[in-house]
Length: 229
Ligand code: HEM
Image (cartoon, rainbow, N blue to C red; front, side, top):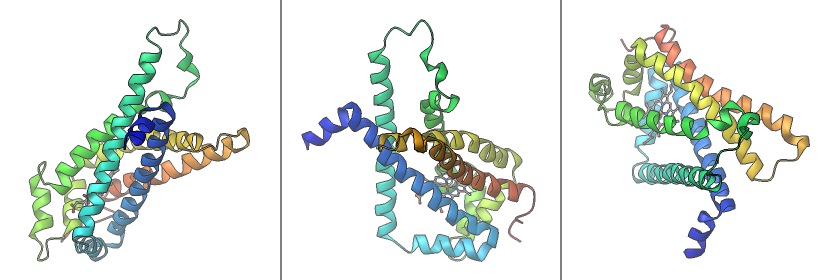
């Protein structure tokens, strides 16, 4: 096992860990959005999807624990790399060399930690029913306890919640866009010929995920997706 920790501690090992865990987390955001888009089809579609996930039983728990492990590894590695970078350059350059870096790349650690805060809030809201328990109660009130439609629509009918979710998607967009570019670089796709293609692809994928999430929150707020009767 020591070779694995030695690899993780190395600079390239840290970058590969960020790339692989980042790719898996990006896969989760796509799958999660595709599931949540069932909201647009109505209560039966999204509630059947929620029940199907729940019926996976122990498999769902394996997936959840795996997701949590990947998430923790991604965050811990990011903090370690950021500290190592700072330690390697204790005295800042007279002329800030990061000026050439994009806004998104400079703020990766900040956007990442904001995402962590969002996920903690999101789980407290929809998974554990700690914040706004009246929304969570709607999910559990249905006969089979999977009325995700009522819970999500009741939540996004509150302007502050819908606007916060939609606004937060800007942070998600910036993080995903730069993350996809970085992981392509780490995985060796940094030939100048590919750069414009990677930039376009990262923009489209990040905008697709963040835009899809914002669309869901705003569709409910604007009454395009109606609340449960
Ligand atoms: C409008 C956007 C979103 C909606 C409507 C939504 C909705 C939901 C719902 C209904 C649940 C499950 C609650 C339950 O029955 O236990 C959930 C879980 C979760 N969501 Fe979201 N979500 C959104 C965006 C996001 C984003 C952007 C992320 C991460 C970046 C995220 C991460 C998670 C995670 C990690 C879980 C826990 C998964 C599990 O344990 O099964 N969600 N979300």
